[in-house]
Length: 488
Image (cartoon, rainbow, N blue to C red; front, side, top):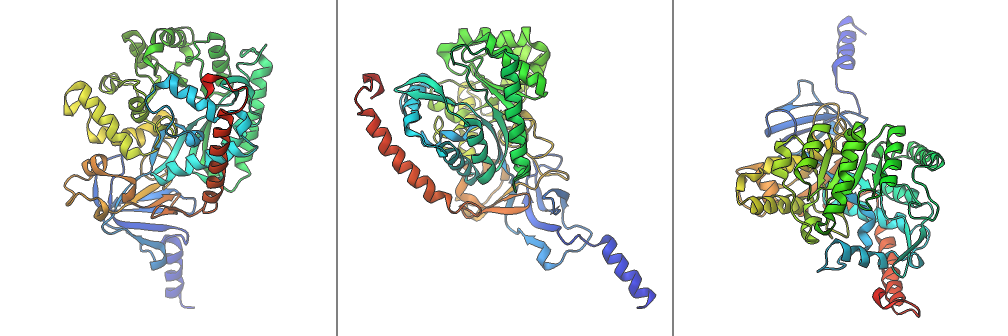
């Protein structure tokens, strides 16, 4: 072999693209981070670990073989949506209490989740169904606020579902997108339960560690971004429960998400609980994300901004349940981080980020009677990078830049039903819908094409069988002897 050929071979090995690198190019990119906001002829390179290594306009300096390229000519590429607050397990509870508020919806939901109607594995299946549904709508990362571990009998809590955290966790891990798991301590309503007891905190730590080990041993280890805590301490205005949950968050050095100030009729009670957190537990306020946060007062807003707490905004659910519209314009002006969430697959009924963005923008603009109360760019950011910041995952997801996972949506503008696109961000926020998604990629690999989940084809039949049985059993339970009139 000649010296010249040896030099050429060395040059190709040293500077040529790695065999596993893939070039995505000729797309209209909306990276959601850095400038410019829109790259008309953009490209990015994804390595074998599913992370972006290069991104820019035009073409990369190095060359790629035909098998290492994906031509996205005429397509719009945006980061996958992030939901800052989600209850995937609610997917079996859509359309309930259609004219009721939160309290009425919870009462209706308790009948659906009567323990006599649930078998082992049902919670995992319900969660998987909700997670996949969110993914098909373009949500590639979500915060799962695990909540309903209570065992209901005729509308009353009698115990707690064993292995509930694990079933929800597995439903997310095996079939869905990336997620932050909001772990919920069980037993908080049981007789003699002390939420501050050291043994209770140690049990939770052990269970959380077992969930981490479960994820690490699975083929989908990189889907789990973090385990944080979910708490209903504010909802119940229970200072002991709040102290216990915060003690656990401190032991684990993690974040905590709390439902707060959602329903107007509970405002005064929950305000006191929120103020307890922001004063008595102020040193941990930086861990806090308030969910919904529709009805704070001036003192709470000021403390939230000063102490570095965050909020998630759930306009579909807030509008559907008549909870109200939070003053997001004011929150952002005060520097409070805001992330959009689709909330429950039941309490919002659809997990559609496009509809969620429009619902939020229109509610706020109508409340303020000004179209500039929030811009389309602000709304899109709140459902991508802003939501990632709120759930503590902005180093991995929420935007397209080198170092982050290549989780993105490919949208076909020819499907946008709106004619020529003059403003890509405006078109996506104001006229976009899931039907415009051509493909969804996680880690640079296609997971959805034309509305078909490529990794979970068999789950559809399982869900259909479960739903048929569940609907039959729910109807039978309503007519069962001994069921109270209010349960029917």
